Amino acid sequence: MHDICVPIPHFRENEIAEVEVKVGDKKSSFNFRVESFNWELSDSKTSELTPISLEEKISHLRENIETYDENWELVQIFTPAQGSKYIQVLFRQRKLVQQD
Image 1: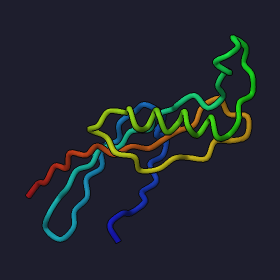
Image 2: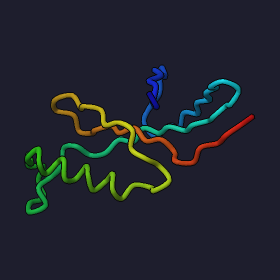
Image 3: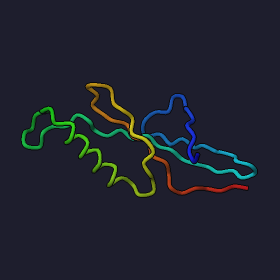
Image 4: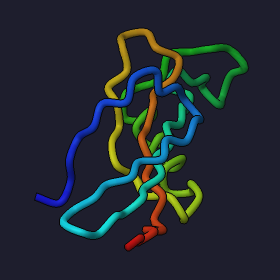
């Protein structure tokens, strides 16, 4: 097992959570960030908010993730509630800080 799940209460979007983990005698620090991306999009052919297909939503989300800051890696995509305007995504900063 390489990952553990740690619930962080009141962790809001666009905040950075710093997590310190000690395994044996080594300490490691990690930074996590939750981002919100548009989930309900308008059809580019019209100026109205026209419902678009799930495939188009996923394509737009994929583009957002692929063009996101390369110093952050994708950890989890949270399932949005039905009718949500945003979808939240959890990222972990790639840089690992080792402490002794």
